[in-house]
Image (cartoon, rainbow, N blue to C red):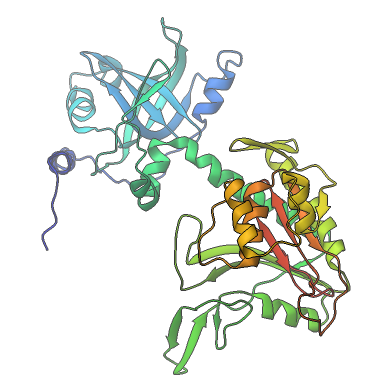
Length: 422
């Protein structure tokens, strides 16, 4: 099937040929030294007079082409800054090709360039880089979505969810605030790792390809090992291998693991996902509840510098200690309804009154879970306080707890001697 190339792509490909014809490498491999970022300039100029000889690189996100002088918006990893180009300074001799032809005609929005010059403030009061020389670092062959801003209003925003998730790199370019989630995720992982290392628990790596999958109830992805001529499965959980390390004599082990489950998918349910599991010997679930509180509080402080965090419409305070209830106690506390003696029909009526979404496939236990999830706010534990027994009379609860921070769930369920955070 022939590839369809848009008119804009055809123009850019012709620009690529023209650049090559002028002896300009559109994708140079040599280093371009960078000594400053846009954020550093905007934060420190003119208070610190150290921007007389700067070298900056980034992507062209806007162009205002005039006669002998023009402006571009340059975006690097940290933000955007205006850059000023003057023809006679870019091309001090008779040959004006680098300005009249390359800059004005052959560069496009999306191209990556490096600039050298100094910083000044325009008559309009905008901090700007006065460019003395520039270099094309990468020619963009596909046009970017153009997001326009005027009077603090955004026009033609790149908001289509399908496009944003399928082309995350484009989303990152035109919606740079999306980077915050990536940065905070890394900080969160580092915070958890630092916390657990401080407790002297051992971080490990366990097999992803497994001859027998286990540790959860899920359908696996299957593959074949050619050299051994055996079937292997991508892990659905790393639980069993971590337990073996506890058996082997380690008191505490954890892993950030990439797991795979060959099942349905949605925005909240991906076939491949990352989870952190922790196992500690000789502890019980109440001890683990305390550890989770301490760890989450630490993460909130590391990420936000405070324990109160805005999540959607809710202001959540992750400061310890958190409230602890059984599920029945929690629902009665937050809704005023005692459901402990209700049958399935009565629970459905309660869910309807509380505007909790339920469907005909849900049994009694699932309806109770949904009421706990959607009708109860704040940060709290749902915990069953019964001794661990190998055999239990029907209807008796086991030792487990589930953390409800607002409407985000972190389930935990395992024997007393070992606990996991999943």
